[in-house]
Length: 255
Length: 348
Ligand SMILES: Nc1ncnc2c1ncn2[C@@H]1O[C@H](COP(=O)(O)OP(=O)(O)OP(=O)(O)O)[C@@H](O)[C@H]1O
Ligand SMILES: [Mg+2]
View 1 (cartoon, rainbow over the protein chains, first blue to last red):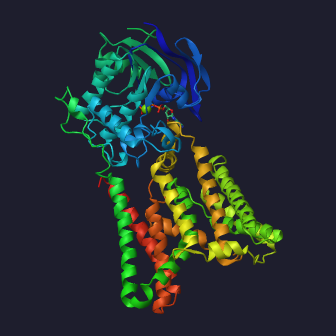
View 2: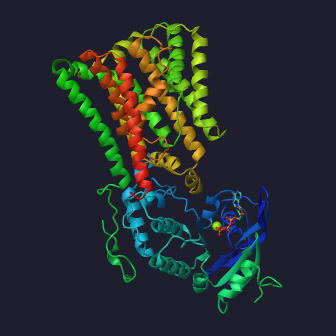
View 3: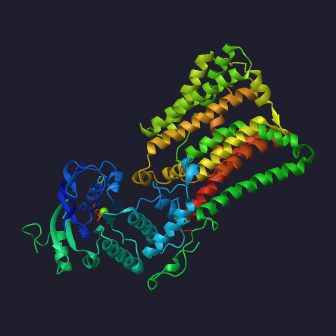
């Protein structure tokens, strides 16, 4: 497998906080990489920097070997990179179909479409289909997202990202608000997305989940990657040790 | 309507189908319908009370026409203000923009001297251009310079009115082409004031734009969660510029309609227009926090003060009471809105 997307030496400072301190990252085609680290390690910041949501002070990105830089999330989207943010970034007053297609509305054919009229029926049906495929607990696509449970909101955000990602899907703590069944659905979805050949980056604090779905685990501490593990054969203790710094690693990629 | 029929992995999934029809209207729509319905109920009660008290004078075609005529100009302004408030913005400058648009148009039309349609057309174009200019200025400052809309439009309220006063020396231009006054100001079509027909057309088009088009959807999205709107690639700055520009455009149209209706500019007469229109929009269920609102609600909100005004005059109550009543209804309406939000936040 070849490296699909990689970052070298990303740094970003917020005032006195060095959120990213020369962080590296890489993911192969069709691979599931887990990104772990303690609270404040810089995981969300790294994801934002990788998806056009945050400018970095220094560092470089390469996509399929070519240097790239994303000034906006759309530039990343154009390469098939999608992200579910930790805060989900949904519009609470809009329903899930409206959120799903926000910024990518399907227009009516012909003149009506040119005048700005949307094809709501098609968008609603496609959204319902996406939810069915994800096993989402959302029961209606015409209920405003603000009135949904945390887990339902999360599945709307995931469905939206899955629908548009065709190269890399970033999921920032996608199971944080989910119950047992929904968590299982998300993990299954990750495997299904991977089976379609899409690389998935999963951020999670749940080590068993990480070890279940990930091919590799990259550990972030104080804004830098301190270790990379093959998931196979790695224990929860090792991961926790690397996260907290209790386990001294002589070189990145040890163990 | 149902889409889960080809479902092959049913074990770990809740049964049933996913609702895709708005036939079951969404909760927001339903609640909003309640909000509109509540305020529509208030309007109906007001009409019923006046109707019972003065059936022979209040429930007449003449009175209805009169009320329609009175709300027409505000209705045009309320269309733009509804868009602006849904984005969680505000526009205090509409009254001043109306004044300066009508002043520029009236001065040029007066100098042209002619009373025909050609002159009126020049006046319309000028009025609209002046309106668009101020609207775009507001939008630019809000979107690009990041000055809060309250401050920007408070500033332009003052500047635009000042410019109107400088242009005229503070004296109203007491002329408008007779074609405008005769055909639009006092004109009737099938008994309905032409000015009201024009306003109705604008309101319906504005409602379609808001509720049926992508432009309208982005308006809600910006007010609902600006960050997420930006993340999905909506050009929020440009949309805001367009929305404030559109509001200015409508204020320009209102400026010319006002000239047609009164035959004079109304430099000193628009100082409360902004507040009255904003009050109507908010009474109609548009939230000042953005994200929700309907064009229909704004129209209901407009008719309440107008009906009260007409009713008080007819039953011989001092019309000053109208101001008291409108203020009270405004506070009550926002109370209901807040209450509803609190319920929603609590997960209802
Ligand atoms: N916009 C910002 N402004 C200021 N500081 C920020 C900003 N974003 C992140 N930080 C800081 O950068 C550091 C890394 O934050 P980040 O959100 O990336 O952590 P995280 O690894 O995702 O943590 P968690 O597991 O809690 O989600 C934190 O100290 C945080 O306070
Ligand atoms: Mg985070």
